[in-house]
Image 1 (cartoon, chains in turn yellow, blue):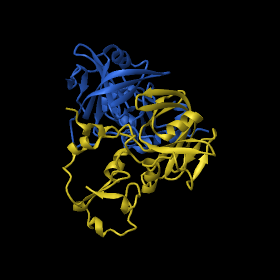
Image 2 (cartoon, each protein chain N blue to C red):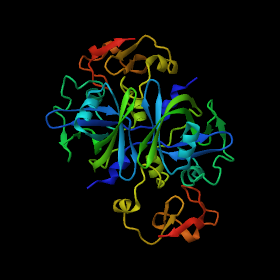
Image 3 (cartoon, each protein chain N blue to C red):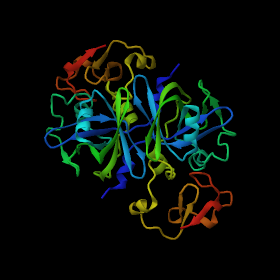
Image 4 (cartoon, chains in turn orange, green):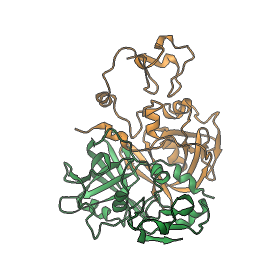
Length: 225
Length: 225
């Protein structure tokens, strides 16, 4: 039987993949960005066909990759990882630079970025693999470490959204973890579990302004499991 | 101008990608293995067209991925990362398991493995991207951490071989580092630099049985730079 724990031994970083122009842009959090050739340097980014960003990359033919650092704020995960930009502008109020191709690049919580021109779009069933030739690459912060997917899962207790290539269905994950007991409250936005047995404060005693540590959703977005 | 330092902020693991059967197999060290779809689970592996393993994967239609742990021996990097298996059997003497598809799986220095059936072969110029549907996945060692590419570079002082998607030409890397001074000896097998200014022993005083800490090449494989 396939042991899903082995999936978590594959190492990934975490990135905001972004596309569009000055009028309208959109981005999402991805862990599957990687270099595919050295000369010329080309990078691949996997994007769910249902993600609004897929549409935007197809339209504009460019994408940027912002490398998230280890101190990335929960609100960044909430905004770019668990919400769709179809009906709201995720870039509004963010620190955005426009690259040499005009593509928006998110600078918040980022330590470096890449800017790529799409040269191939490969159909891998539920996802597109966009292959981009590198146009520009810059460092933003030499004194921070990139956030890895394992750090996000283990230290920040984060989970993958449903559209991610690395998403694992809850029924499979349950086989890996203890059966769910009372005293657990689940964030309906990102899936984070507040487990009273591991916390000092009961969920009901948390202050009203308390936010989900992963996606910054409010207390009202939690349901008891 | 493109800042190549940004390339090193993309996070990767390190793996032995292997193919073949009980008669003849071959494997190489890869850092570009990643999941591309969730349901069914499919993984991509990038492989230089000149790598012997590319031929073997094409012939057999399956590949295995062994996830290397942080304590991986230098000889493993030397054997699978910097030598071609065209004229010698890399699997001889190794701890090999044959998977459900008959594909060899390297168990040395590995904490988990995946076994995949190739469903697509994508041409990305110098490299093939093999897309494999997962057949099996198993944990081998729960008490170790996966080796990351940054750990390999920063702690083990390892470099990428010429066929790797993430290889950076030395003339570009030199712009990132100090200009080369006397007292530096370079491993002609893997590119590791023994820098006397950072070591307690002069290169010429090292014992004859001393080996390159990255690829285990002998002292005679070093040249002064």
